[in-house]
Structure formats: C-alpha cells, structure tokens
Length: 564
Image (cartoon, rainbow, N blue to C red; front, side, top):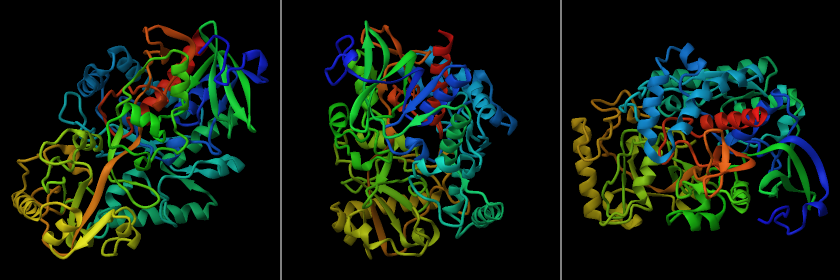
C-alpha cells in the first residue's frame, strides 16, 4: 500500500477524522477485548472497532476453554504444574513450527494475564478436572489437564449492553445452566449416575439464578460478557457496525485505521499503535481456496460469520508476512441443515467408528479433533477420507446424547433430507446408501467388534491415550472407548472437515509485533488471536489453545505499546 493511502485510494487528508486514540483495537473477541482492557489500565486511551452488530465474535460462540499453563487458578486447584513442565510440553507439541521465544512469551505472560483479567473485570475461572492435555504422554503433559473455563456470570452486570452480545453457537437447554465441563456427563446422563447428577445440577443452578434475579451466563457467553464488563468499567468504547477498511500507513508506520461507519469511510488515528484482533478468514471462500487444501467449505466452520480475513488482508497490504495459512483449528463436522455441528464427544463414545469411502477405518476416532481432520486430508491411496462416515447402532442411540437429540429419540427428518444422516436395518443396506462397498463395511465392523470385546485397538490404538477416555462411558469395559455395534437399525453420519476458525494469519514476534516479509517489525502494528499465526503451530496443546494464547498475546501487545 502506498504511504499515506487507504484501500479506497484516497489520501489520508481526504478522509474525515472520526476520532484519535492512543490505541485502536480491531475486533471485540478474546484478543481484542483483553488488549483493550490492558491498554486502558496502563493509562492509554482506547477504542475497539467491531465489524459485527454484536461484540464477542467467535469467543462468545465458544465453549470458552482456556489453556494457560501455571496460572493461579489451576495451581490453586492442585494441578502440579511448573514452568519447566509447561515449557517441555509446549516444545514437544509445537516443535520447530514456532520460534522458542514466542512459546516462552506465551508461557511467561499467560499466568500474569489471568491475574490481571480477574483483577480488572468481574471474571472468575474454574479448573476443568480430568480434561486431559491433548497429548498427555508427551514430556510435561498433564493427564488431569491444565484447562479452565469461566465461572457463571450474571448478565445483569452488563445492563443494556447485554443485548449486543453475540449469541452462542449452540444455546443451552432452557431452564439449565451448563458449563463446558458438564457436557461429558450430560452425554451419558441416561446411563450414568454422575451424569444424571450433573444434569440435575444444571437445573438447580438455573433455579437458584432465577430466585436471585440473575441472568446466568457460562462458557463463551460468560467470558465475552465479563471482558466487556471490564471495558465498560474502564470507559473503553466499543464501536459496533464499524468494519475495518484498511490500515493507515505513513512513512512505513501504521498510524491508524480506516473504518466504515454509516456507509462512509473515516479515519481513526492511533497515536501509539493498532492491535489487530479481527479473527481468521474462515468465512472467506476465496482465501480458503487460495491457501488451504481442498475440499474445504465456509459452511463447515463454526467461527463467527464476520470472520472474513479483513485484518489479515489489511496487514498484507501494509507489507506483513503471513504464516500457517494452510491450517485451521480443525474438527470433524456434521453438515446439518442451517449450521454444521462440530462433532466432539459423539465420535469418541463407545459403539461408534469412522470409515472412509472404501468402508475402512483410517484414524483413531477418539484422537484430538484437529488430528482427525489432519488425517482426513492426507492422501489415502485406497479411497478418499472426505467425506467420512461415523457408523453407530441403535444401542449407541439408546444410551447417548447426540448434539441435542436425547437418547432413544429419532434424529430430525431434516438431517436425513440433507444427507447428513442415513439409517438402515442392515449394514449392507447402509453401505448402499452411503456408497461404500458392503463387504468392506461388514468386515470393518466385524473386526472392530472383535477389538471392542478384547478391549484393545491394535489398528489405530483408540483408548491408548488418557485423552481418548475423556468423552467416554466408564461403564463400558474393558475399554471405555470401545463397544461393539450389534443392534439394528444402523446409522451413518456424514463427517466433513469443520473448524473452530482458521489458524494462520499475520506473522508476529514474541512482543506481538507484526513482521514484514523481510522479517522486520512494522512500526505501530500488533496482532493477536486468529488474525495472527498461532503460537500452537500446526498442533493443539489442550482445550483452550485458541482462547488462552489470544488473550495472552492481546495482553502482551497492549503492554508492549504502553512500554514503548
């Protein structure tokens, strides 16, 4: 981009100046709101510009797991973490994909960020016991986990601003208050005493909140609302319906942003710096086609619909380098009508298996969700692994929740009409419906059933990792991940490469400063969250590996601006 010009081609002097602040933050998700809160508490004037008519972005839609090793919340809960263990684990997970100084910055500043947020907002957090790190067998891995989530938040604290909170990806059932950690138990509540007790507890929480006149929020709704409450208290404005048009660059330095308000462009001057926290490019079909392996679809993501890569593209026009653009926070998704469903517990529960177009298994169904899709994208000489099919029987359906469909209840007819689900009384008939060889599917199920009865999976080692057992049924022995398929009718559920958002973006250093294609710092420009290349590289350390680093690097960015 030419010095002093905007994407509209008009010189800076030709644009109306809407306002001037020390710091302009683009995006009101985890990265953006944490950066804004930090800058404000460092004594800087701050504004957040947000494309959507709501605040919270993908954060508000999420389960809001937060992965921050060594923080005060998990240490108080008895997690035996240390800086050395955390560093060893992250290095083993990420490898050489991300420079060691960026990994170290995340680990060093993450715990401080958590304490800062709790001191400067109404947010509190709770440990998620048993939610293992995704690779607990690696050096420094924690079988009991390091993840936490926000405590219940009273939406009344936001007053009228609550109406502008982005809705959740999936609403919790009416009359309940549900934490992320509850879902593993709710999935098996029909056949498990603790699951039934957790289900009753979700109702009791809602009843208590009603008696107290509260508007209870959990998960991403709580985290987004809590951060916004912190911004309200710090007098930080959030301009909704204000999309980024471009960065304003003068003599190679970013000096503000060009935004659109009421259909017209205007300049917001940033005296000290700009922080891009505008999310990924999951809803930009052209960018996905340019950078990512096919097939990939914007319909399969659960990221906020406004995430079309605006901040990344603006950074590129200013000379920024990008990295990890081929990757995303993947997970198998069921392409249901209206909205794809990110399939988490369902594919791990016993009595399910996943096959490809040849009718054969090709992956450990209980593996971390990003790994499953990475395997789906590998070239399989036998048959494509996209789409894949999750095969279950009626025994599975009689026992477990599937999305929001209770055990024994039929799947909605629209799922069948959309081709997302098929049902048949024999495996041969089911194979015919989904276009896989009947003999192969029969043989695969028979082999899998033998493994289930024996309690071990020598083909793909399902159940070998502690992580595999988180979303399972402890009543099933000898391996809670494995149960035979035997009771007709049988079901096939279509699986495609879904995601929580893209993982690639602007290349940053350990201080969250954006680097150009020659590796030099672009003055005045920082980035965090999914608008930046992830500190997790091509991997995924544990639940909350998106939100934890997003908040941390937003915090780092604002402190770096304040210190400069």
